[in-house]
Amino acid sequence: MVLDLVIIGLAIAVFPLSVTAFVLVLSARGGTWKGLAFILAWLACFVGVLAIVLFATGGKPPAPRSPPSTASSAVKLAVGVGLIAYGWYRHRRGPRRSDSEEADGEESDTPRRQPGGMMSRLDRSSVWTAAAMGPLLQPWGLVAAGAATVVGADLSHTSSYLALAVYCVLATSSLLAMEIYAAVSPDAAHERLGKLRAWLQSHQNQALVAVSLTAGVFLVGRSIYALAA
Image (tube, helix red, strand yellow):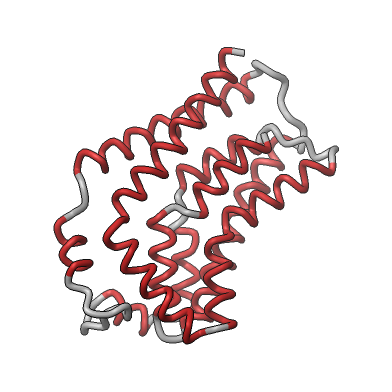
């Protein structure tokens, strides 16, 4: 269980779409507070999903080859296949023309604030809007795979609590690192986050392909092994 949670947590942490959205939130006016609201809502939803799973299992792992155990492996297999299919689709499609043109035409590291544009809307948004974005922009396929893995948690052992805590922190680590950096050194963070945003715009498709295929192959392999064992 621990290895699965570490790999899934890392994949969630570096999932390009979530990271890009959070960079945009931090780049908005009042971005530090909006970023904090985003993270708190993200964590609340994340922990809530795990709590529901643990409540359903009573904190005791199901017996091997029992219906709940088989269902857990089947969910991870389905998510893995879906990630591989999505990664292959993104690879075949390639980056969208609009994304490439926006990245090539970026004159500075500061996000553009055209009237009616994304950054303009984020500037006008409230912390409540940022909080609503947190759960919506989670990579729910990977979250589902993590929840299916947590079915095997045994809360009678302290190590399980530690593994779950590490999983939650690891999955949120990229957001936490950017939020802390923006709060401690706002000027430097503004410049570096602008560069990160520009890099993500030009390499987002490749990153999505790499993360999706890597996580998908891992989940498919682990779930097939669990079903065949």
